[in-house]
Image (cartoon, rainbow, N blue to C red):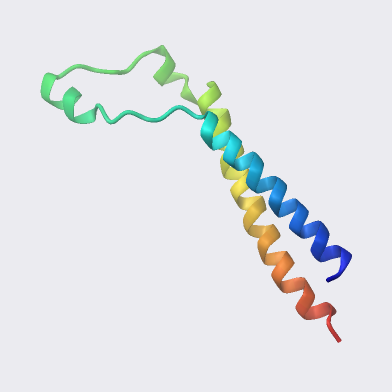
Length: 86
């Protein structure tokens, strides 16, 4: 096992742990669309209109970025040894 594989494994472990913490800190989305459709009420508020700048939006962006980093790191750890083995 090379140093590059060990570094990749550590990167994958850290990204996984941070992703788990970020996902657990997000609020669960409620599914009130059926109730709103029946009652005719609108759940749109100032918070809903500015969702792109909220804490939840930032956590969603971080989660998406970490998922991409994890995907690339797993591919790199599995593909690089193919080219370095002789």
